[in-house]
Length: 201
Image (cartoon, rainbow, N blue to C red):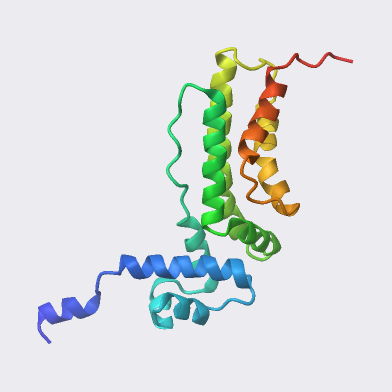
């Protein structure tokens, strides 16, 4: 075998399309089957690749799933504008779109169930979907506070939780997809943030 042939046989460039298909299939199966029931064989079949193709990239199921969760990125964050209400609504809607894109509610349940055995799954889901949106919401609120548009004593972390909470609560109550949930959450929170500070007892 010539040097050129040896070099070609030693390593063919990885296919980005195969990588994407494998990672997407892994996320979908994690959401639908759960961590314990899903298998690399199922992932291979769903991605239309061989099992050996997966093993060349990831040695174990945990390796594959942590890579799949690490690959989850936020959709492009909406550009900030001058209006606080519009900014907050856009961030919330973008957050919901990101969660829905990866079947996030099912993923959250699975990752919570696996936290004791594979804690990195929940950690990565939190890092890639929840915390970036919390940071965007807090930044918008902090700017509004500095501009004097909301109370100086406002608890911004609590406000961020109050903004995101309806998304999860509506899902649990069977109201997921309620079209005005983001606007209603923002209006409720801003009413509190713009009101009079609580008087000490």
